[in-house]
Each structure stands twice: as structure tokens, then as C-alpha cells.
Image (cartoon, rainbow, N blue to C red):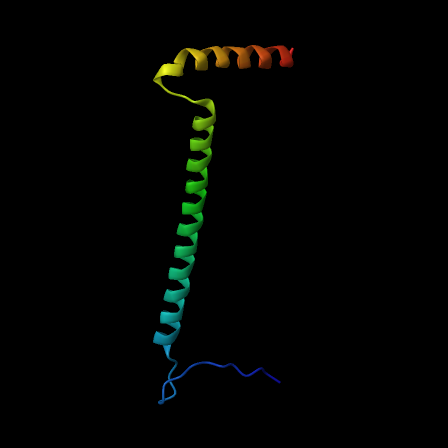
Length: 83
């Protein structure tokens, strides 16, 4: 026994390809929107993380010396940890 297929048809018995084309278009558009929003949420999260890091480090033109000193200190600590 073969399963019956529920295929949308026109009144003349031909398959309604436009219906399936429209539903595929809507599914593809939904997938594109979801991918776009997922990427946008990722970028917003990255920007927030960078902004939080900059705020905590207080990077700016006035603190370049302090940042350079901290970088040397971190590099020296990393070198000591590795040896």
C-alpha cells in the first residue's frame, strides 16, 4: 500500500507550483532574517565587550604611558610564567 501524498493542486488537476514557490520564498526569507539578526546580536555583543574593556582599562590619550607600563608588566609576567 502506497502512502497518499497531499499535494496542492489546481482545479484542473495540475500541481500548484506557485504555492510551493511562495512557501519556499517565505522560508528562505525567514532564514535570512534569522541569520542577519543572529549576526547582529553577535556584533553588538562584541562591541559591548570592547566598550566594557576600554572603560575598565581607561584607555585614552592621557593614559598611554600607564597602558604601556601595564603591557610591559603583563608581558613580563607571561614570560615568567612560561619559563
